Each structure stands twice: as C-alpha cells, then as structure tokens.
Image 1: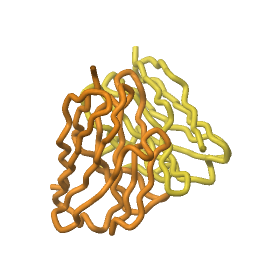
Image 2 (image 1 turned 135 degrees about the vertical axis):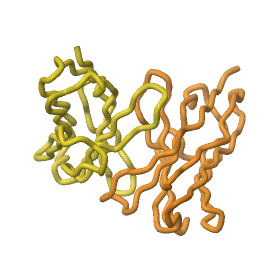
Image 3 (image 1 turned 60 degrees about the vertical axis):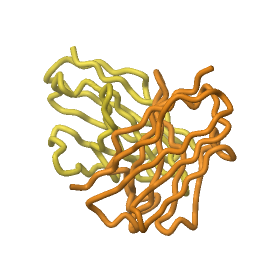
Length: 120
Length: 106
C-alpha cells in the first residue's frame, strides 16, 4: 500500500526546536516532489515547504522561511522538517504530502499528521 | 503573492446541489485541485486538474475552472459530505490554499 507516516511532533516552548519525519512506502519516493502542509486549530490548510525529487530545490512559505528547513533522504525513503525558533502561531498539525509534478499534479497522498504544540 | 478566496460556509439540503467557489486572478490558467477534510482526519483529494476525479471519489463530485473562478460541485449532496473543503493551486514553485469552506448539509 502507498503510505506516508508522520512522526516527531510534541510540545515545545517558544524559541525551541523540533524535527519532524515522514516515512514513505509503497511507491518510488525519489520520483516525487514532497511537501509539508499544516493546519492550525481553527484555521485552514497552510503550505509550509516543498522539496524536489533529488533535494536540490527547496521552497518555503513566507511565514516559515528562515526558521524551518525541509530535507529528504531518498535512500531511507524519508522526508524531514526541522523547525527552529518556534512561535506560538506554529502550533498546528503537520502533514507530509506527495506530488508527482510541480504545478501540474495535486497532493494525492497525505500522511496522518503529527501535532506540534508551542506553548509557554 | 497569489491568493485564492473561498466563501467561509455553504449550506445545502440533502439531495440538493452544493457549489463551492474558489476565486483568484486568472485562476483558470492554472490547475485547481480540491480537498475535503473532516475533524481528526487528513485531507483527501476529491478533484484534480480542474475536473478529474481520483479513483474512489463518487461521481457526484465534479469540478470546473474558467476565468477567475474554480467551482466544486456536489450533486445529490449527502449528509456524509459535511466537511471542510479547500481549493489549491500552484503559483510557480509555491502552493496556495484557499481559506476553506465549511459545507453544512441540513
């Protein structure tokens, strides 16, 4: 089965750090662009970051640029998101998702999400 | 930066047709996708490339995209269709989501 499994969420104080992981199985991971999307309580979906198949291109949303870092390990079929300088407004469920071709294809498979809570 | 706008809520009676719009500058020149999300669940793709349905999505879901507006249409709406619906488009290398529309079936 095609599957994405998110992990690594937790509670952290403002200014702290977390590293999220997403394990992929059932499909050729290195053929897909991968993304992180989040949904804060009471808010809508917000795109966080994209990474190219080989990891050579990365793009970030305005609210996280300079604080979050997306990366991948194709040998381990894994996607990561390093969250630094966390703010209260980063509290959200974080999902990884895949897309075959940038600007053409949708996010057709999503992880189950991992909760990040930033609180003092 | 590019934005797409959705109505916060849409209400429909069971069996009727629900239409959820997504507006953005020349949105018709981009591909629009739609996702549904219920509480505690991950988003699920229901329409992609404006009007295509993934396998497993009922035929009552359809989509269109022209000019500045993409529309998700749910024909013969059922109570199980109550959910938040999000449109999504690509703006170069970045992703844009609409604010979401809460569909109420009552």
